[in-house]
Image 1 (tube, rainbow, N blue to C red):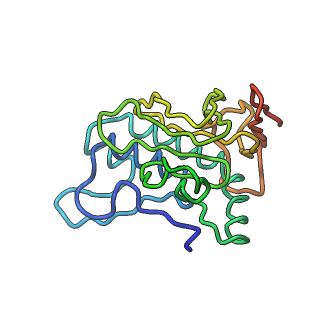
Image 2: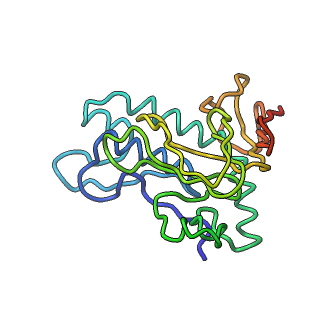
Image 3: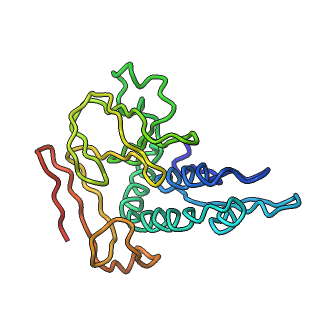
Length: 217
């Protein structure tokens, strides 16, 4: 019954996580109703979950550019999040929800805990362990598209997806549209402003049930 749920990604209390788990947590938070880091420091070392503190304390400078990319992706999909928020208010359905809510007749999703739907269109499969560079993703009945490259997949299927440190598997249901706010490059991860009222170059990505995706500016 709570449509807007989130968490302090990378943890709130205790020492910082590894650089990789910080990145993985930020990737997942990009596709949650609220994306925020917040922590308290009560020990000898700074425990803030800022990307610059994680980079400084772990010595892994890749944290900052990867975090920057996903923070930008978050702003790119803000129009989609805004529209899905309106649906949540109107229907009472949570924006982030278990696959079982939408696929009640599919026994394979009844106890699935490590994938979820983000709004009506997106399926998110976060990586939750250090050192993992691929993971299996279950796609229910229907047509699905890889959010990052548009590859078409027919469900139901269990698919092994590449997931390097800077990647998170995200799929979009066929027949849905994802409105993004991007710059002139039309690329996800491009820098834009922080308001839904001043789109620089709106991009409507329509995921069709055919053999291709369509981009409409």
